[in-house]
Length: 222
Picture 1 (cartoon, rainbow, N blue to C red):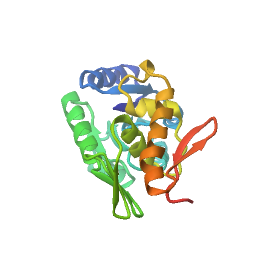
Picture 2: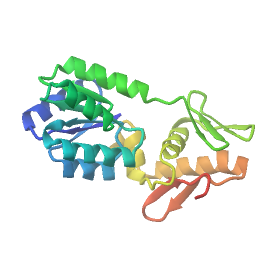
Picture 3: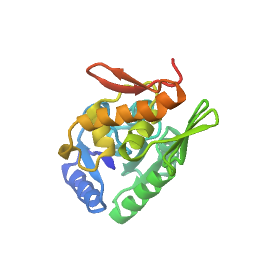
Picture 4: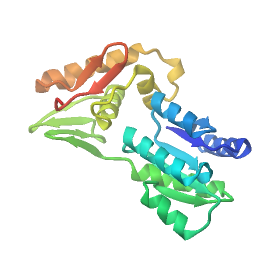
């Protein structure tokens, strides 16, 4: 699981990074909102830790930007402002949690674990297509098929972001623990399995190849 840290203070950014790595998370670090948006454009993240010190206006724009790209992403705001009013305002604007400084890193990790746990869906339902996570099963109009391993994870990941183009690199980074150790060809193998085990069985099209860009989940058709 990869998280994004958005904190302009280099020392605090490094401390958060160290804490998350010790907890088993992978991270990228941004020091500006502009850099954070760049990372969101090229990689998929499960959660973002962002400091409120960029200013409320920039913070809210960033939350909207992140949630627009990835509706399921979790955003935890850390802040020097201990007022209840700021906490309420931030949560109302789309943040999933608000943690006051000075940071207790054990609390931060606990809040991250809780946020990610609450974001885990057991199934995805799109019209009459149901993807059941725990059973690696796909149901369509009462008919069932199974898709195992990484192919199922690729299928479910694409289904989370329908009609969004996702590159091979983004899929590798989101699903494989050590993406640098595998080649992009594994994605092609997974897509072929999806087309054989799902599309061919149900006689529908779920994955569209976007030449030189990646793939997108296209069921039902736009």
